[in-house]
Image 1: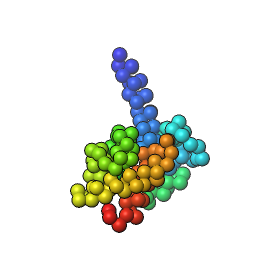
Image 2: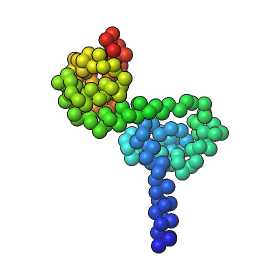
Image 3: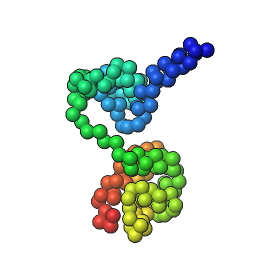
Image 4: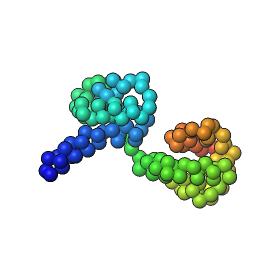
Length: 159
């Protein structure tokens, strides 16, 4: 029984780095990144992230090896992750409400993006007016939509 628990723990720890592959647009630096360079898709990201993890990516970062310079800035932002999570969980509903120019989910997104209450109607109108930019294809990703939205908001005189 104890041996089974140890095997399960080892398996869980060996695949834990793979979860990092889905957290961002890339998998960082290290052996896995170099081996998977130019490859696209979730399987390659998972394999590359896993390889980075099991080949001690932290050593590469510490000593500046394998394209890891250790001089970068950690850019995790709680509000960005909340926006990403909310948009991911409510993507279909957000697309409908953006097309309609308003709705509860769109209002929550505006709140997460720190749009002031008095600007929420302008925000909803902006998403409706630029719906084709936000959703240019049926397979647009949450990240692509949010990037387009960020650009539109930065260009808007009203927001």
